Length: 441
Image (cartoon, rainbow, N blue to C red):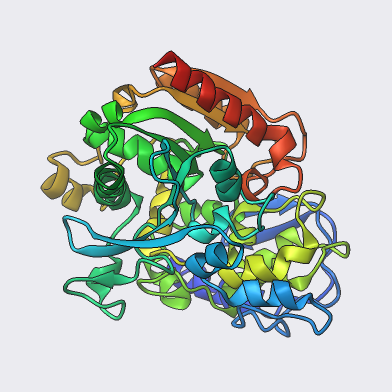
């Protein structure tokens, strides 16, 4: 079947999305998705026979009967409950940003110790740092290293869905991108920690979007650089020129009609529906995939996964906590970064840009303002933080004290936080650098 040449781009897109939900089960090698005359992806995967609309992708969690009851319990616990369950001193903190968002901050408390702030990535939450359990979660390991551990939750995720004026049913609540997180959420979080601990500086560790919001804070509020001992960026993102994420690349290519597309996957909150999920699960899943949970979880569809480093046993916990939420505007912004090849503010179109920014193009973020010491850690198999883009970022930052390409070719975007061998491959190096920088202060 073909559409008339006069059919609009939006109509073609809707037709394509609906048809993707009806794709045949067996997809051959060199899989391509074509919309109009545009090829979005070309990959060499074979879809397993059970893929298709029969997947109940609206169900966030499926736990088999033979799953360890302890793991099943963890999949339903929140961050505070997990920390408390495993015998660590857990605290909940609540703070309100200058623009009215109410954020939850979790702490593994070690009063008097040097504070370290952990900031999660896209579609994630504070749970990411501890969900793998003691001896495996970076949050716990930092506590064992003698740090006072604080874990942020940016607006819109599981733990930060309140506002002094709006509810999540209001469009206005979701009118944000990672720009507002860097401008409001992270500065307020840092100030709260320093006030609570009566200290002047802290360590900062950001994964993926957790690095993005740091660069934005530095660009717009450079005075906060004096409050940072060391910023360590795991899978750092700023430029997405070489990004391989099918979700981000899709949003980049359909920038003119993406607002219409998002009617199908969540107008304000990013809530993908069946057609959207099935379109992308055909790209990353093959007959050797551990479980269909991966193929129907948007966080894996956005970042990819590394089979050898993903702990299959803990998968029920992972899908119980992620994805943790995002705004559609936030996802659009990532698509814009890919399309433009630049690290800049949200593009509202030339007319609204001129009204908002005084220029037809959005302003670029000022990476020269990142005066804090920075360490960059990246992987060869990272869909979002491709090595070429990290190298570009490195050239733009004025105070990089360490840059490390993980010595494991398949190391993926999520391996930085969930990888089975992340401690040996990366985290021990981070601990050493933290001590080294503290001693040099």
